[in-house]
Length: 169
Image (tube, rainbow, N blue to C red; front, side):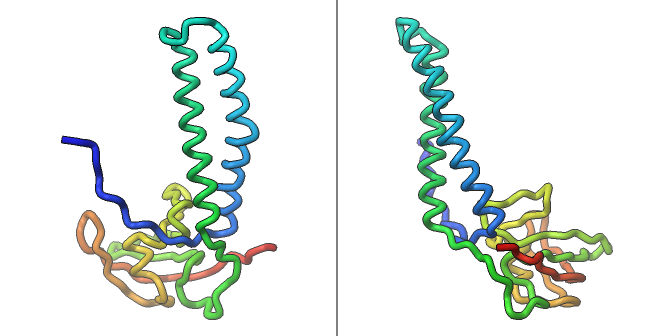
């Protein structure tokens, strides 16, 4: 049995200005700081002689490959995504970039922000626009109820608040 997996459906090509900056900063750090540092260490390890048994050389070579793969991915991804840097006309409805507070059946509230797939961070409440919860919330307004098929089964929610953070140029 091989390691082949069917290709995943590409995610949404939207990103918030904050997400764009985060990816761009990561690319800059990898290219200008991390890669030259690893290259220096790789050169020093290569100068030590026999490379076949040189663990430092092998490790740095793999690390450089990982950095190069991530740099290629980030460059391609930053070319593909569209930065959503304007607020929607109807700020009472849920669209990309909205902060949404939902209440579940038990009365517990949770706050989420709908962002692109490159920005997901559940600890900060950032969920992908492609997620079942976000798709169910899109175009809803305050007091709208909706049902979502989650991995644990169906769940009902009610939207209690929708707001957008002002985007600074």
